[in-house]
Length: 196
Length: 181
Image 1 (cartoon, chains in turn green, blue):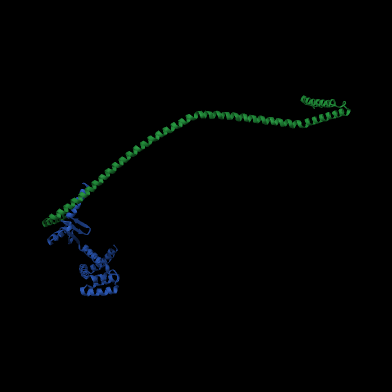
Image 2 (cartoon, helix red, strand yellow; image 1 turned 30 degrees about the vertical axis):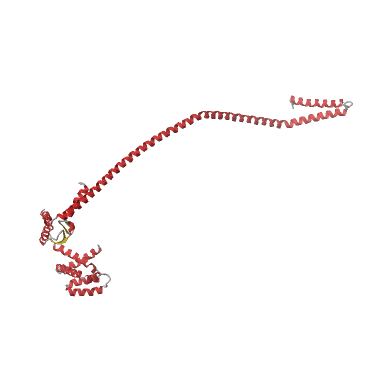
């Protein structure tokens, strides 16, 4: 098994700190390093090394995997955020473009409505004219009909009055001789028919 | 309409029987005379025609009528038949139908003449003669006076009408004015 340089560096620094600490402790009031202390130091050192190696052996892969996975997730998230940022930027640009066109669009819609309104107005006026023309024609027909009716009524009234007057005159003026002549004429007509 | 159909049925029956007995004209005269006499006695005629009275009473009355007016036996039997069959109320129509059948048989046309004044016998005869020439039938007219026709005369024989009245001429004149011809 080969440990990387960093591992050995960390172990060395730790040991160095431990020796410095031990040395400081003897300098502070103790009378020299005792063999038991040296022995303890060696044991601690060995223990520490074994612990370090075990930790390295057991935790290295999961730790590496954890960090790799974390890195990948972060990269993925970063890429996603980047994509969303790009999308948002595009949307922003699009909206900006739309806002720019909005006024023109509103103007176009307004113009369109104005044109439609004008056309509708013309259409209504045209229809009203046609309707007025139709009504005028109908009124003329109605007037003509009423005139005809009035004429007919007048004619009927005239006929009635004329005949009434004629009847009265004839009743007054027909003499018995006239009556006999009328009967005679009738008999002559019958005779004429039988001859024919 | 039903009355006319019934009257025609009985009149035809009597007429056929009368023809067989060579008494068609006589029966006609007798029936006309009897009807005239009955009409002159409205109470009697009303009882005979009314459906309220039973046939027995009507037969008793008929016996009396026959005795008083000396109605021939055949006519009496016919009247009894009408009472029994409850058809006596159509006597007037039956007589009219009989007369029409007789007229048809004898070539007689009866009609009515409407005049504004009472026609003289000479005028009536002249008119009947002229119509006889036209219809080739003996014509008998009854005169009716109606001053409303103003002048002229109107003759009605069966379905034929000859209208020579001043009133109808004025009506025609009125139609011409109305039509504006």
